[in-house]
Length: 205
Image (cartoon, rainbow, N blue to C red; front, side):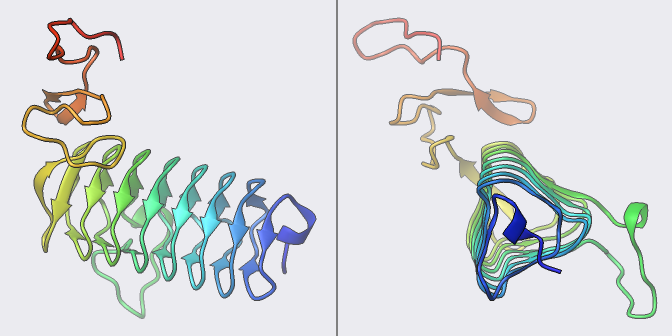
């Protein structure tokens, strides 16, 4: 049954929204399918041929590009970008004759602001950190630190990325003005700017 027509959600005539928990301003396009029991936040964009299964949670302002597959046990936090053809798994040992649901599945989390490039595959049980960035075709088999840039199969860290999406130079100060510092988990926003070329101390950012 189509529920989106009675809410602040736009669903294309060729899309299918069966969930009652989709936030206002979300757009569901042709041949996309949001199943009952899926939770999708406000102002999301669910593009053609995307599939959002029951038991999936999607935050606010998330972009789900064409042919993205989201299965039970996946959580997508706010402001995440999922590029075309991104695929999530939820079972390390799938068998056609065995149905696993709920706690039998390994959860996967994509933290706030992260970007998954086109064709990324995420093996279940992984957490992708805030503002991390996966290159096109990356195969994620383990946790990705916040702000990490990962590429390849299996995905490996090759650098660090600013909140604005630009790759950070060695000094961890982006051209946009944001500065970072190393931490146990990778890198994090610095509390203060790095000192400027004019000799200033910088300011709270």
